[in-house]
Image 1: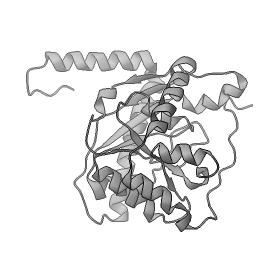
Image 2: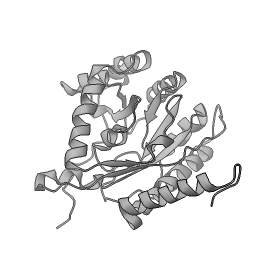
Image 3: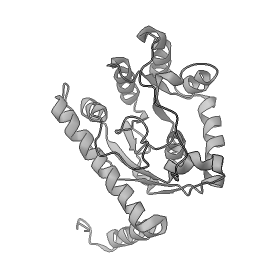
Image 4: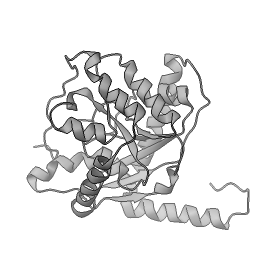
Length: 262
């Protein structure tokens, strides 16, 4: 028996036409998240702190202002909230279009979420993302695409995040979320310990029309950084990584000004 609770089958196509989602994109492009964002963050943060013992490492690496793309690995629907718990600025998310129905679409739209039609060449999503970044906003984008169903970080990145990074020139912060693959185990009354580690921001020179190869190369590098962070948490655990980060900071403070620290 797997130690991961089963996931629903993925649905990759949405039969609704592109025009159905225009109003969601229009709101995301012209308005900021409102009270729904703060309320959702409070509720999900309390759950994360109390039941998942969620803690963050190096959250100061996320810029406090200006355009930024946040790039976590993706195991669970909770990843959006876990990644944003510790960030004081409001973070905008892309979400599969199938979620935009019923009463929940009110929460999504007022919380600053905008749809992506998976399985389609959805240019509207990129237009919305570029407009948010142009207003110096923060966007979360998963370079793996959908959620991992194996409990392991993917080997191959989707090139969309590379495209967005190159077209906008916005810095990308790789993020490892460790433990969220077992969030679904609450049905078995099992609650994992979750750690969120933020990496150093990476920035590429802006390219107006990057090639597919350029997009893929950037996406692969971002995923490589995420995998390195995740591997460190796997190998050393939360306490071990925290100890290494503190040692690094002490070494940087002791080093002569302008000297590099290995």
